[in-house]
Length: 142
Length: 287
Image (cartoon, rainbow over all chains, first blue to last red; front, side, top):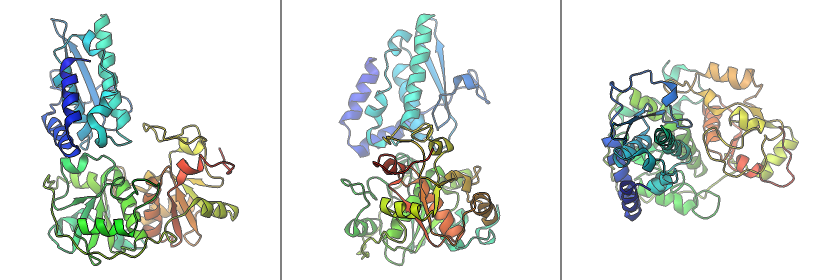
């Protein structure tokens, strides 16, 4: 597990439900949509995260130093959780080598969201993590 | 979309518009209640003054598969500062699916002074109306509820079995794939453990969201709903009807549409739904 993500999960584990909710909202507020230099609407289906009701998209760029940079879009205005997770993934994984990011497992969703995971969004959020992992795996093999 | 009172509903007073809510934001006799599937959504911003009622932690018994008791309901109403004459207005995500579920549970305790905000969160947001993160605090009340009375609104498995034998009207509001038994859960949702797929014999397949205009989450007009339920699917408002889904949430939306918008007076929601029926030993199932 990448160190920054591991530390963040530890922090989430220490929080009570109210603090965890505040922290998730704080990440959602920090969410930045993919810049036009990377992608513009309509976003291509090839970047669409399957099973995500928040209509999330993800892009990965391999930098010259072989580290990765992730970008996200969340089309559903109620997609607060997807925005929070996108911000978390960007802040903890962008800048790392693809090989390291490929070790991330979708079980982090349960550890981060805990009581804030509803039945409809759990699979979509896990799909976001799986999409990031798949992009990292592909990049690490190229 | 035509104003609510011009849509031909049997009980138009059960619905209020976003304009009505905007005009009653500071009305002390109105309590806005947001009920969502997404537990983060209320905290991220809600209609100013609205309280949060969570379907799992506030409305369900935390041990048995059942709803809260009279004491629990009194405590909830006290917490949200509601009295007997408070008009409770429900709204939420997913086109008011959870709002209708909360509305339905409130009817088990006879709080009939209840309404649903047409279009729910999606319409409020699309109209760029204000949202607030301030969690309001209301003075506690000493709400006295009656004992929970399930019979008029809630069907249990034995009721469904008896209804089935009489070839009564049954509405399966799940997706066509769940109805056909090719899928054991909603698209994109986890399987919550039904051992068998299919539907209760004789049930009509009418997915719940067909009652909604997808653009703004408002209910369709009475004529459109009549075509869907009464003409295309041959349901009669005069006949006893039971609606079901997976755990009774989607079907409470259909229950609301049939009861209040089309005037099905004798309709109940089978909240045991497929997570019960699909696990019962020996009950008939059709695919």
